[in-house]
Length: 354
Image (tube, rainbow, N blue to C red):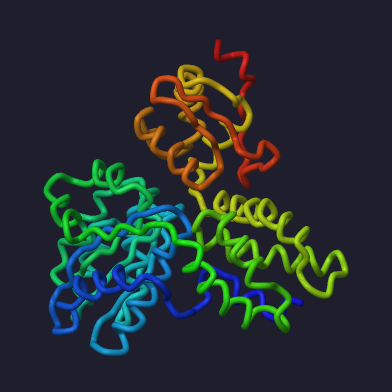
């Protein structure tokens, strides 16, 4: 029943549907680069799985066809500031060999030396960059501009240097909302056509998927794949209603696992704290974090509780933890307590918190 799994992958190149306004905004802000100038800096924000990275990738691919513009999409999860600059150097077409452990100032100097045309750097999952001073390094170079992709614009901007915040405000922000059901069905149709054999799913079933997944394209796409997997496992010649009904949690579990694996090590260790001691109130969560913060960060300098709370918020965006309630009365708990982080972490007994 499944012809090509790649069709259901996030990176699968496909036409961008129902994002005309967002694409027009991107085109307007990037237009100076087509004339050899520096593009505007951009902040793209919105929920996970609604096409933020896909539209940026598509627009940059189109831009490179039309003008002498270079671009690089950098996955920021697990990256240090040095790692981000190192990758920016390596991905520039006229890049040069550099060592990852070179001093940051030398990496910046190298990037400044080689950039001779507009260079647009996409910082995907920019929420998790531990040191946003890297923006100052990148934006100090004349032809370099940045597209930052985040979940929450306010939390991210609050961490940006005050002098740089105006670059990412106002018209430089692009807000992505969830899709409506008919829009999401339009997005699913080509995936079904190219990824499955024949037409094993009905339009009514696709509408069900689109509605159940709340306008989140990634979840909907993975649910169609999961339904096809279940139909195959159950010996069905087409996708049955029972396959669709059972597809949502299977797809969500796979997305959750992939999201967890994409996070930096300190996030993974903090997730393990939540998984082991949750459900737990805010006071105990804070005390547990402070007690384990050195072990969580290892050789890195630990962050304060307020920044650690940002980490927890990011994991909630990723559907890894739940933290309902008001700020001072939240309850922290792993969504799936059986899902372990791929990291070794020796957590002491929760009883030591009291």
